[in-house]
Length: 131
Image (cartoon, rainbow, N blue to C red; front, side):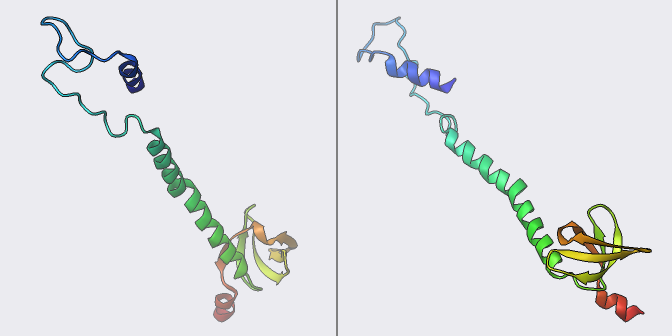
């Protein structure tokens, strides 16, 4: 809408210095100064930058923090920890390998990837200290 006014003003011929009484002039009424456009009206680049900043703080940054937290969790896994996998299996870690861990859950022993571990319920140190 604002651009229509800008383009119309740009293509209009310049008005004579004085107009006859009773005739309308293009632009601002006589006696009033032309109002400057609103600050954000023509600058859509500012809106794009604001949206990008909002997306960073609402979507990208929390995901990065979650990734760092998960990396710290996987680095701190050790034998004897009681963990939960992404599929909901609760078990105790028996051995830790480079990419996998062996879990004991009830009577079953299974090997799962480290990345499937989502939470450490009890640390191996506290489990050994309480027994």
